Length: 352
Ligand code: SF4
Image 1: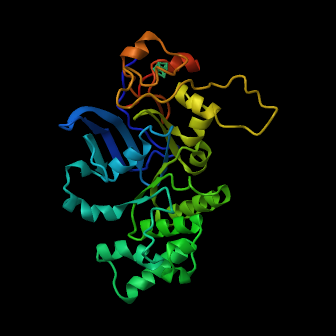
Image 2: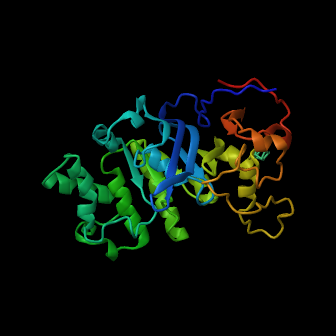
């Protein structure tokens, strides 16, 4: 019999990093209205009861199938969507209790890089206007110092200075994403949510943008929440990875640990679906996911993965699995992780 620990996960290789963002029970449900009187008939349960800590200076990757709630979670952290329940702390300040007016100065600390560099930039604004807009809104620079700051930002993201007077349609997808990144870092944020920031780009350009994000992180001690469905991209850039399934966390671990020793059946299935370009590799042990993601308006009871899990037992259909730290920094939400993974020293003393 195991007891449920209080989760305070630490990034790999560091016991001294400070939490920057802390989520407690973050939930976001979208009401469904129907009929002549527009009555509420249910909720799309996009994100439910997320507990997570993001440490200063780390990159936390978030992966999962489309529709699992990754982007909603990112937007809830930034308060672009207000959570239905739960708390989001930046340092020790609970953002969910603040009004939009009170949030405004804190928005300088938290920025977002959007998925689609083709639609996320206003085609009527020059690159200079796009990058300088947040600086003007926050009254940080004006006149020649504003122009100088925009030139600095263009240099930082590897764009030529003549980009200042040009329009987004004159640039490639990778260059437009550099404009988006310049805009995101213009206010010297501490935390950036990159939502599928390289998904719309060619593979060679993806590598350049990932390297740019890595360089900026080192230069400005940034903290990233990196949302993507491409597992290889997330492995490349992340210090830790959280796997989401149908609005809940399935597993959180240091990136190397998660990719080489996944504990949760869903993570195993996701990783075994990555194509390996080597004909000598034995594919017979692959775990193939059956069926589609269930409807988030009517999620399965107990463990939400139970309708697709090859290890399901009756308990899974009734009890929601709690997060347990099975290995240092490696947390899984599944009733059967010790049996499935033949963990030798389990049950162990849970870590507080
Ligand atoms: Fe599968 Fe049960 Fe674990 Fe859920 S709790 S992942 S259904 S074994």
